[in-house]
Length: 399
Image (tube, rainbow, N blue to C red; front, side):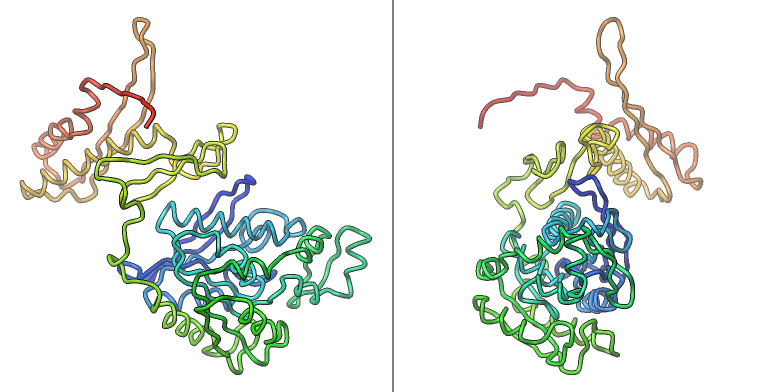
């Protein structure tokens, strides 16, 4: 497996830190893991379950909620609603950059968050919760003695899990007003509930309440002997194995599922705003989805993807690289560490606006002078280059 540290921009202008654990080869499916209250993506449950799931073929994105771990933001200003928003941002990012998650997993309060958003996630095949409370307000029991102080002072420092955490009044007000029953009732995705009968932090009656409220298909697995944080030997691996075996019933292998935009014919690109930021835009073909955005230097930009001119350069660069590669294979060349850099600028010339793209090709040191000259000539013949230098006609009409 491999682990990639990533940053995910949010509509609030902050960034969340995450870790994408991937198996060797093509993933069976992508999953998102939401950690417990005041924990992080590096907590034992998050890291052990995620990494064990990669052994089963899943790619898992675990992330830090705002103000925790390496994510930006002030935890004292966090609420359950803001955690929901973070989770939806992460799900959208994963869908735009890799593939939409087919499986959501949540631990403790992260499980409550997963249950609260699952009905809104398109393409979801399965949901699993670990030691999740039925009512998110259950978490206030961890600092019940400080509730009055939080009400009077606006916030208070409390000890949770052996470390001090500042809890704000906004969290108390928000988490106690969550209509979780309605959200669980709205879920029509297969649900797996995992809970230890001896959990002393969130007792097993919460699992029973979730099970009673949820629709079929639903399953319950008792994590006999496990503690709330799954810190015991083998507990994370066992939990991940159960989730993987159960989820496999509902998740098809790669290639069995319909393409994400099967209604789009080859050669057509669909573009629409992502609805979360000023410039964020979703681009889609029949088999791929990605994001475009403006950089943060542009007011309203969140740098969630390349800007439109970067995409233009990327199209020419990709075509250049592919064309040189095809020529090199035919001639028996080894391109090695050959790369193409492109820049874009617009200048006034004789009163006209001229667009100038400068393409610089850095060849591998092993390529001879004659080979380099041949590759430079073939680069100018790539289809996108020829199209850009040809005559363009762009028509716009209502569909």
